[in-house]
Length: 158
Image: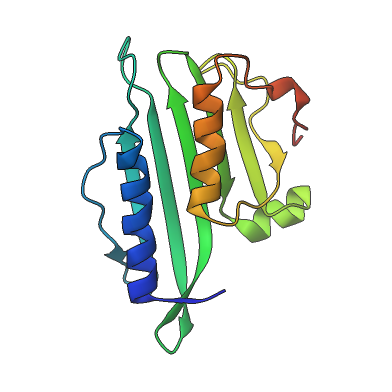
């Protein structure tokens, strides 16, 4: 699906408002234009709650390629949760698509660390995440659940 520049900017603003409404500290988002005719953003927010050793952080990053006629299509993404108080990480990524397709047969991969900085697998096979809202919702569900992330249930990409 292709979007206009104004639609992508509105979508980014909506993601920031969504996180802000949950009590996250969200800096003013900005849509960047790159020399490659791509646009993109990196949105990072500190989540409410414990700040020991530091607050949990959630990020959304996307790159959109020009589709012509002033339209753009999302080409890459990264949605990450680093839950410092719980000492764990969960993430959904899609980048370097041709390389991942050739090597693993998938366009998307995931990261899961029950103990932050000590993954049992570098990349897990993943399913595409169709929007920033879907990615953030999945990460927020992980953040709000005090139980294990369930990394052992994921399929390691070897």
